View 1 (cartoon, helix red, strand yellow):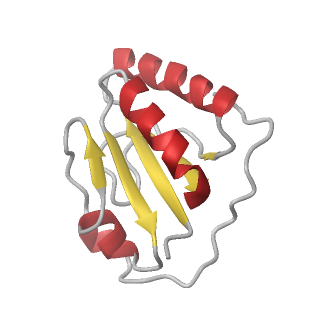
View 2 (tube, one colour):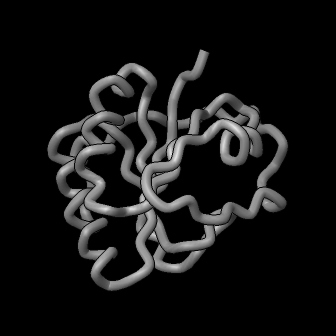
Length: 126
């Protein structure tokens, strides 16, 4: 069973950052998710600036189709959180738009850390 997912929403230009800001505000208005902070430089396995959206599996059927249709050309990595971190990012993801490189070597094979999935009820949009 997959308890939760991450969607990593990437931007590389000022125009894409503006699109990402708009998308983030739409997500915050519509879905109970946990919005991660802005990473304006690549971080961890990610090779482009991004922010993360963490969400429980129960909203997948409503959130993901909406995200597919409202991503406005942004590249998005969607992966399950199974505890097999490297496989989740490299073998089991979905990509919307351009497929970007992911640095798998910096990812652990697995993690037993429980993910805090308390949704943001008043998320910071910037």
